[in-house]
Image 1 (spheres, rainbow, N blue to C red):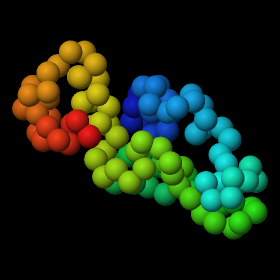
Image 2: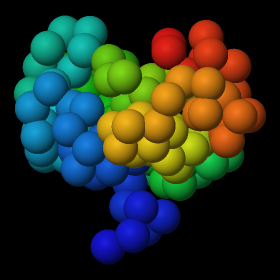
Image 3: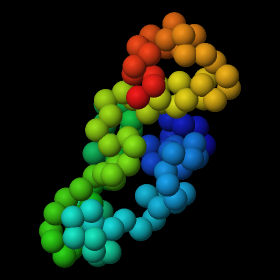
Image 4: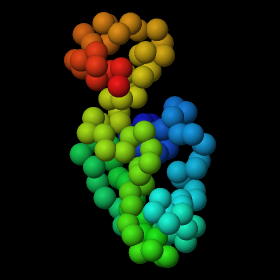
Length: 111
């Protein structure tokens, strides 16, 4: 399956950025009351990261996104771009070469 057809959480699991593989894909706990009584409420499209899920807690009735509490929560850079830069860094590409190749600042790449 290509990166474009996978959800952002599946890509993170493949790259190893989620703390526990499969954690975000299977059971979600409410980040507000920690209840396990959580259901998918809806789906939404992001600008560059595909489709994501919104969850609702059956106990406290609060909503939260699939990426809540993950390393990609609130990022505006498309996940596909982040994966490209990470793969290049893992294959030994230097920081200055990354800056020239991808057009991001050193601070952006390091953070």
